[in-house]
Image (cartoon, rainbow, N blue to C red; front, side):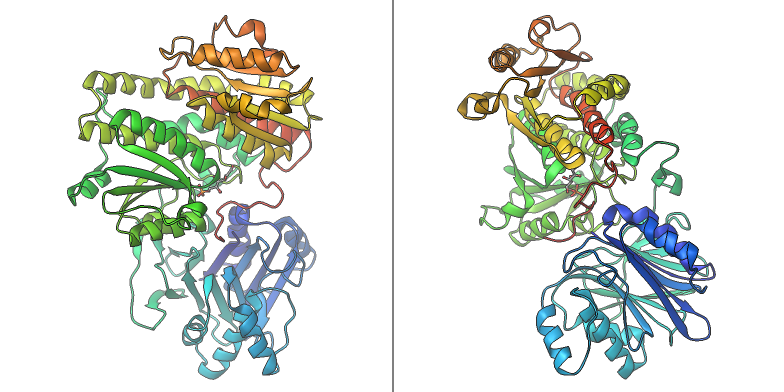
Length: 616
Ligand code: F6R
């Protein structure tokens, strides 16, 4: 939450900073602002409530003076409503210093009172302005931004990434981080700071992930990292494996439309090089983790939202293929209930951003309890993989739309690979079953492409449902997480009440919601499934149909048992049990997007949300 950019070099800082903010806007879009250090010792700043486009329009009408050092911010409001005054940067030291902040300063009230008692004036409701005022005062004393930042962070509690510039140190940007993300982009004669690499990927593919409680000082020719105490420190350097065009819309009407179209490729990328045609899974990071010794008797997934639904599918597969007891917990519930976690527990976090604060805190909790930690993550250099014992990158490419789509599929695949790996490691799964799964995986990208191509049909459906006020989703076994995911997409994108239920739970209460005209999506298992689930789901359809529901079934091609009972059928290719949910979810992603479009809503930036939820 909140996007942060810093630049120092030879280029126009406002161009670099505004370009970076455009790529980071998915992190928050309540307001945007920029500050530039202008040669000849002055600092100019402008900030506006609303999306970045509002600020851009303003700057076009009233351009800022040019400089080659600058910082910029897009905000997701926590303290104080989205107004111009609460937008960042916040100025201090008589307007000579500018500061931007991501996170929450928990002791800001106490600090603010202390500063007010000393005669300081505040111009916003934010916690962040406290840090700006403190940095201004500390600079006054030290005449050095790095030393001043050190003095400030020593007094702050909570989560923060801070960037500061001062007109008296024109070629310097200083950053600090605790519990919020900050990465450094390494250029030639220029350096960058950003909440993630999207901020500077247009200029460099070399980056460094700053560690916890570190301060970084960038000039055009140097990057200096210290601890909060001032001791020299280092940070891991890495190459960014996608280029700027991957983070562009590339002619699509929305990032979400583009990212849904990339679902087949995302799955292929997650699988690439990790499974042989015979089904043998290679995961070197897992080898090292298991080589450290100790048995794994239990797996706990921790994740939030869509990532948690991906984890549910992973858990079903892992338990089946490896026989290891596996459960899923919402990260924000996990650490507050004193879970029984120890050295034989593998805690697997699933996070597209790798920065979700609830999940990060749960990973830290698990590590403290002695558990092994594995991160399934899409973002290189993010905090969660950096702090985990091992990482399984999903390689889905940048996901910019706030609603997660391709990341969901790649997370499921990564978790499946983990299950297969563990099953092969402990001998629970046969070579023949592994080989069958390898064939399924191989067919999957092509089958997903077929599902992406159902888009036109789904758009028509969404068109006639634009006035719908409630939609229900039903599924059993692997269909249940898909139902939850379909409902979440509709809530967050189309602002429609939507619920996903395990179909077996219907008769325990939710069936009372069914009234004539209620739209219900049902994920129907394959009739070839050896369990009796298909028949049970068809019975569930009949039960709700009898009460007037309009049923849209996602069912295997040619499933004759469903046809008489459904108002619409979206046909799925033949697939095995664990592949079917991946196919069924694609039309539900498209449906959420198209219903939002039919209602004229912003698809990529739904209200009240932000990608990368870096507050608890
Ligand atoms: C829903 C969505 C969210 C995220 C959740 C976790 O479309 O995107 O529910 O899945 O906030 O985010 P990550 O995966 O970054 O930890």
